[in-house]
Image 1: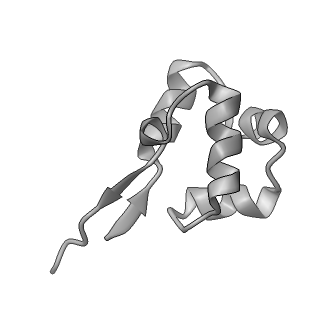
Image 2: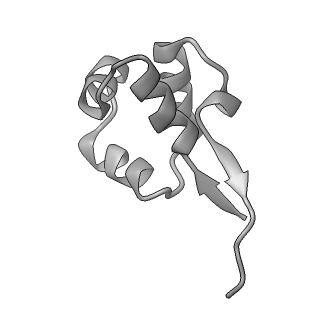
Length: 70
């Protein structure tokens, strides 16, 4: 299984909020935002900060997706 944060990016577009705005509002480190952009794992603490800042549930910002075999 892989992680996808596409839901988060779509949510930010809907709210006309940039990734930099989210980073500042949630108090997230720049390197953590890089991990999010690369669909890499981040801590639950980071996800909690994002969800609290946006007023959403964790399922609204991320999902697990199956690997596609080539």
